[in-house]
Length: 324
Ligand SMILES: Cc1cc2nc3c(=O)[nH]c(=O)nc-3n(C[C@H](O)[C@H](O)[C@H](O)COP(=O)(O)O)c2cc1C
Image (cartoon, rainbow, N blue to C red; front, side, top):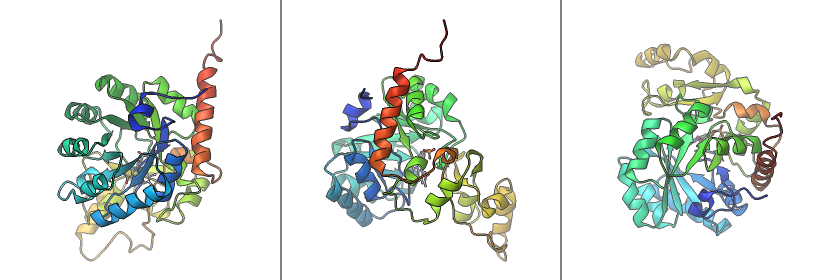
């Protein structure tokens, strides 16, 4: 049985599942592979320049004629939105914004004939996105790999669904297979985006070469949410919105600094020391606890197909645990 929801018609895709925007990982090859498989393909453009965005969108278009989304980190394009303009000009079918207010961008995206998706980490942000007229909302739970907020998906998702009326909601964070997709559909979502699962797709080209192996080696309890990476990134103060941190697989550096973020701020305010003078490697391993269920790399198309087949099976047999 096909698993189709209204989000499929809205985004012009066959399946209500796809790859999340992942800076450094969701590059043109992965986006195109997911889109070609009929899923929601996303190419991440975090801090790319307008020229890089133009080239990136063209690279996806060279590989697929299917629609796909271009993901930006909202607060990074607040002062210079030329990268978003470049994506629209290059013909992006939709834009995904995360970590900031989408309001300044709604009209521009719609006048280009594109859809706007807003990834949110609080119910207030979901309401705001709905009020300003985005086309779909991505409710991102604390389980998510990479940057995320503090509310877990299970209580968060139904509250977002209730808060935004008729606007379709996608779920993200801790979804790794068809059971996860079926579960979020039960909670009122119209589909799901997966990040960590696609980190180990064959098409993922990570700027952190060790990341896929770190994900495959990780157990469910090996990921940690911390603001430590962003304190270092901001030179002693996180520049990310309040309540946002990043989830990474544990490394010696993560073990050293998670839970000691105040000490890190203190240390960076002292010019003579830095976070790495103890010899640790501060490279992040952004991924969530769903890593614990991932055992091998496989083509992105196979991930899309198997998640849909398994979700269909779970939905068909959803009464199997019930007794008379
Ligand atoms: C390696 C990595 C990089 C990420 N980078 C971004 C990003 O650039 N923009 C964004 O909106 N979200 C980013 N995220 C979060 C994802 O969009 C998504 O919400 C998350 O991966 C979903 O949780 P999951 O990893 O458990 O599937 C990133 C996640 C990962 C794992």
